[in-house]
Every structure is written in structure tokens, then in C-alpha cells.
Image (cartoon, rainbow, N blue to C red; front, side):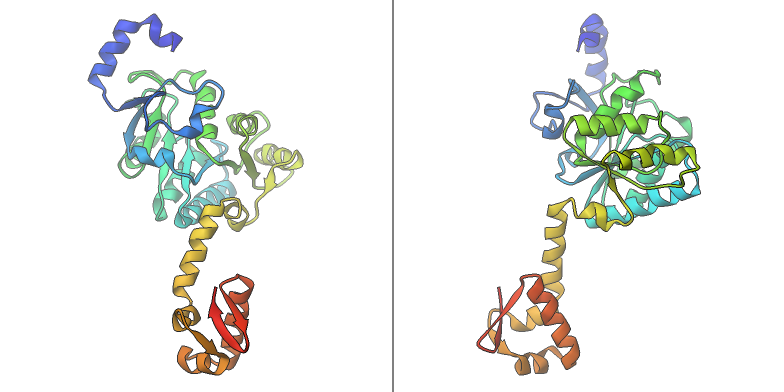
Length: 295
């Protein structure tokens, strides 16, 4: 805000031309950012603004000089997590960031990009098409006035927005001196979880992630390790399972014996036992006096 006040007249002129922005006092301003250290006073945006108020946002960050392993993990995990309904946020940089956005766009979910430049500056230029794609199918944010060039000190600052918007930060590859570890530190300072992929101890790109795991970050070896930290996603999957269960459909609101279920569900005795056991363990059905009921 101090920077805006120094050049108040030019700020007013710029904002009058570019109207896609929200301020700290607007209803659309994300609650997740309100209580972080130095919340942005203004957010300029392009795309679907409602995405930044999603309950299920995960930051995926990592090295700009990612190797094949890191690129594959970032893209595949982001795609799979997007399919579950998690919104992927990252910094639109080359390397891990770009692959995270691309993976999310391949999934059925959405993605949010945070720029370290003005909203009208495509940086890096090699990601121009990706930035445009995220604007069209997701949302791009910047706290900087339109026209702000890629100043070096702005990128570490934008990391607090990446961490602040997210429920957790997932670091795929990083050196010990990387912006990704800054994002992880900011996440911890603001009460967010940190996840990391373990890597080859002989590679510099693994030094940061291995260090995070050694110091308390959750080791991730499959998407389930992340999804289980998003209870609302698990509940959504439970609802889907309820709808898709043939036995639950047959039961309806009634009460049936095993033999009656066997006839109506068109399953073998072994298959029915397995499904009833799984449903019972999940708390979806219960047996009483030899009859099965939905909970």
C-alpha cells in the first residue's frame, strides 16, 4: 500500500483502465489470505475468480531446472489430484510450476497461477501460451499494478500468496536455496501443511525435498498421501461410492436377508460377501437379526 501511495495519481489512472481487481475489503477477497503476514491489499485477476475461495487448494511448487523425474511427478500428480476436485495453485514459472498447471488442466479440476509481474506481463515469455490458457480455464492473480516488469525481489514476495491461498504446499523438487523452500517456510509460518517427494540423495534437486522430510514434512509416495489430508474430498468420494454401490441401490430404504440380496444384486456369493464386508467397514450398512440395512 505504501508503494501505491507514493504514486497515487498513476495508480488511479492504471486502475481506471484495468477494472479486474479486488481489494482486501471486498467480499470476494479470499479468507485464506486475510490473516497471513502482509496480505496483498489488491489482487488483479484474469479468469474465474471464485476458484480462489475454493476449500480444497493445493500449492505444487519446485525447481525451475526440473529433471524428467520431477516433471513426470509434477504433471501426473497434479492431473490426478485435479481429478479428485483439488484446485492446483503454482507460480507459472518454467519447470515444476508449468508442469503442475498443465497437469491440472489435463484433469477435470482447475488451476490458479500467481504472477510476480503485472497481470498483463507474460513472464517468462516461454510460458505465454500457458499463462493465456490458465486465464481462460482457471484464474491468474497478481498483487502488482499492470505494467510491473519482472523485478527479482517480487518473486519471493509472491510466494506468500501461493502459500497463503493453499491448504498445503507440495514440494516436488528443490535445492536447499530455492524459492520453493521459501514457499514451504511461509506455509509453516501460516499454519499450512507441507508435503514433499523424496529424491536421489546424490542430486541437488533432491536436497531441498529430502531436507523438508527430515524436518517434518509429510513424505509423499502416492496421491492418496495428499488426498487423505483433504477430508472434504474424501467425503465427496464416499458419496460417489454410495451412489455407485449396486448393493446399496438394491437395499434402498428396505431391509433384506443375504439370500434376498443374492438374488436381486446379481452377484456371486463370494462377491456379495466382499462388498457387504467393505460397506460394513465403511459404515454404510449394518446387519440386524439376519437382515441387512443401510445406515
